[in-house]
Image (cartoon, rainbow, N blue to C red):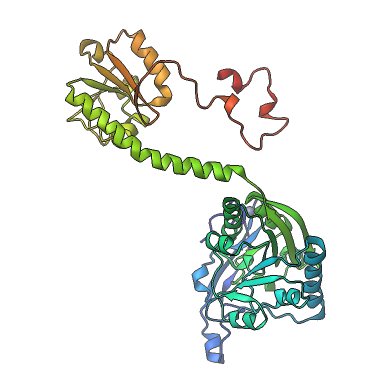
Length: 428
Ligand SMILES: [Zn+2]
């Protein structure tokens, strides 16, 4: 069940075509009249995306379609179609200089498309991925064939293709973005930016002409010019060209994953955080144990929200560390979820002074430190989590979200970053 557009993720949809359940139309062709009449039927509920116009079967379930077991070859031996294939090969040879290059065809079927390229003897290396029964035909047609699905993480690195071809496959996928995104993502991780040649049926004319025959259960997706281009662009590609071809019935898109430095920085930041959390946990629990062994009394300032997350993350239980205060009077008398301390008002610490105050909410540290001084609460030390351990708080933070150090991608030239007289920058 798709609640959102599989091409762009938008959730506002318009009903387009709903019919009685239909059997698979191209796969698993019945071998008898009885079998044909008793064929399993599947729900047909085609919706158009309110944003990109993509038309898709909301009720589609990929696992109902037995691609591995039966032939899924589209049959078109017409002269016009053959001419379309030859023209596309011409574009790749003359416009994109594929001679001598490595090409991968995802869902290559019988391999006849890249065979046309191999027949030109340009020294190309052609590799097909085909989970279906046509794989052996593709081998016969000169391709190196993996009888499998294409996994970008594994296969981009081991094959290092210059060109990825994917024709009449994307419209069958339950999650078409996933394939497109994965090639852009892993391409960036491996520093590989292969040309991507995509071809799909084009639904525009079917909609204009009221053609119900274009809606097949096997085609979960029916692309419009915009929905295809938008999907690639928002998945990280530069679309070099895109044209309606074969009398406007199919769309061919040629693009390339963009170099996206934030993929690397996001990955490194996530990995770095994951690793430091272990070291931090060990260090902070050791520091807390040392405070306790030294006989120091400790209060934790902040017991809900991020404060509660801190106390739970470091296992600060009510038996070992019973004192928690919070600036918010409405929380006084309640208990810290998970660890069980009663939340006391800040002034409780004036009558019951402690040696050490640990500020649990780093983002409010400056305000809490100010409040401790304003209320005249005495203690030997104020600690806050910094650089993987509890450190004395000095009260002079340079915020890590200082606008001078950050740049938000994609800012509109005439918008937020132009620097109006009164702007968010002045709050920093
Ligand atoms: Zn959409």
